[in-house]
Image (cartoon, rainbow over all chains, first blue to last red):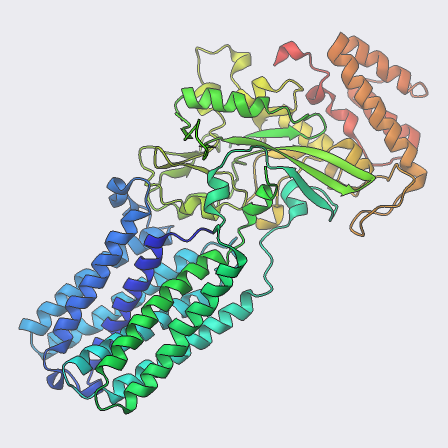
Length: 311
Length: 316
């Protein structure tokens, strides 16, 4: 499959926004020193949630052929996970705005309620986003609960690293937050490895024999039927060399997981952890974009059987 | 409930691409069009087509068959492309089962194309919307068109009458009879999409064990003396091999005769071929060639005569 840059940015940015929202809910529930000790950091963090989410929303329009009709995408929420995401993303952002208002003007109870609802909205959005991919049953690389686990864990990891960075920026104690971020990044790395191992020996759905309805195992496409380009050739191939795909895989493992884990470990013991955390978050986000690229590029779509010949 | 569909006879498809060009011509000028050609005279030409003819080689030399394989939307009865559409632009019509895209609602997110395992949908870059075979829905109900021409453009254009069109839910329709008598099959049935379009196997390949024959039964025979080149092929059945090869040859000549001289000549051909069998009504007669000579070798392909070329070309 050809990765669309807009979708890579959309899913990584809103994932981070959701993770940050969950971290704030944890703070509101009394973890990491609680709201009172946070000195207004959660409020500013909510603005960042809105910024990341809005950025993702804008990016999501860019891969549409007819962006002016995007509003129609909310119509089929009964059957389509994409439609559900189109509803869940603005709902999450709306909840973030309400939460910001509650932190500014509300009482303790309304603040707590708003934060819990925000975390729930984040969870719903994760399910919708991941099921867009996990729900396509003929794309076996995606059709697994590991897809959902990965989206959630990577979002949580990036969100908690960002939360730790914002706390450190304010000069607040971050040891506990960094420990959580470290654990979540490690969990995300393990889950990503599990998905990779699961997909390593996967065959595309169906078979070449049943794709054209013959019994022989010796089938070769002589002609795909045209010499020009087509949507089927473009959309379902990534166009990169095997070397580049392998480089991206190593890249997302190192940038997304290995280096951030090392940097988080350093930050946990550092007197001035801000710079370490900033580096960890930037590298992690870059790694996640590469991971999402690979998530698309790894797919060998069953339709490619019909387009195997060079012309 | 009606389910319109195409039934494609791989036995007579010669891979001429007349269905491809006629489809493009009709649909680029019709309600589904224009089917834009991106950069038509430049180095990166890419055009939208609803129908493609591909070619596959099956088996290993010298036991090979070249299969010309027309592929368009299969109008699945459980279309995976429809429920994923976020806008409802992709839908399956209740009245005739045609899967369509509403060009005014499509936002061009391409999610439906991801969900289709057959690669049946093509995105039109210039119009920013998804497109696909409509079974010429703007033609098959058009009262300004003579009734006998109210068929998809590809069906009207096919010079070998390899494409049949009709209601696969009506057991008496031409398409249902052809599917029954020839062992018509759907593509990748294991995926549960239940394609409405069917393909009729090639008799030579059924005989060679490379395709399933009538009623989905096991392959009949291996006519060649050589053993199968690949382990997946069915074991040779030398005792009935000659029957299958002779039957296939007979049917080919019947088909050709009927094209050249009409039904009468085809009937004569049959009588010559089945000299031992008594005079029977046409359908049973054709079936008896195979059954009589081989003791029930399982191929009932002859029953499909109305769908196969006994019908005069002018009827299309």
